[in-house]
Image 1: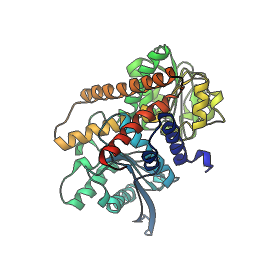
Image 2: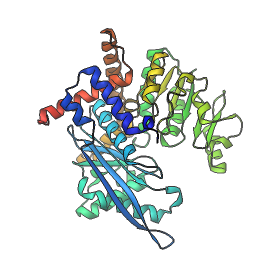
Image 3: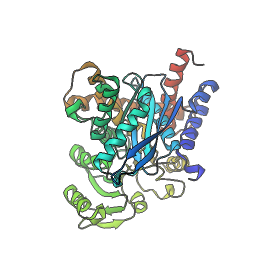
Image 4: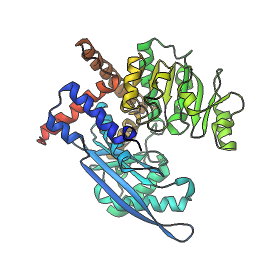
Length: 421
């Protein structure tokens, strides 16, 4: 991987930028440049061919000055320790910006779930929890689902942890099925939070969501919900969407039933009847008002940032815009809202699930959404007001740097209060 696309180097560069602007104490800066704890584990699993395969897994606890570490678990064939470290850093800033009582963590296993059956997946999931079980808990580190992990996988993991501690402990894992004390509203909370941010940003930019054209990169959990909720909440017109195989564009708007049929029948949204086939690169550069990267890291870079035509970039994925691209978009007057603001609805929803698990009292979905709206709308307002305050003083900063300043300041103050420096 080129150094400029290494996600952890990017995370450090973003922190360094904010630290310089805000005048962060150098002792705090050095603590925050590296994770607090990094765990690498090996997980033996007997596969369907009768042979035992050893998988490598990671858990990174970046910082817990503000509360138990919190972060998802990825199952991915290209998973790497640097990716997990970056994601754990971004989780630290995400929970801090939302002002919820968590630190940041992340986990991952190098595996290809598409080549595994359910029994193998369950064995791998349970083996991972056995490997990291001493380092997690509802007041220590609380995992959740992420790329290629599901509520079912979280249920297996919770059950394995319960076997280890010999009692029920639903608060150890979030993103669980409702049958084992998951939270209503959790499954779409990432996209829902992102669209609350989109609503507020549209007001700022004077974009009418009923007539706006929206492109969504990604047809996974976040991308699909971004599509459905855009239409449901705002009557918005999603004209382009993509998956790993490519994209489809229809100026009249896309139909979800036809998209799902195409995905089922052909394996890709490009099998959609009608519309125009695009590459993922062409989707990013399409003539739309709002672009929602909801797939993977490093999609908008210094090589294509000058070709982005949207007025608003809403980072629903983690790390989709590189630092050099961030500067280019800012200079071109495109409002690029950072991932750890836009997609924080997922961890806010997980926080609600954890609170409900701890208290044994559960809320209906509409109450979850109302609480989510209140928290993430304040995060957006805080970010934009911080940006304006620095701009007014003559230091022009991006929304990302503004969000970093808020988040890093809160973590640094917590570390200072604890006597860490």
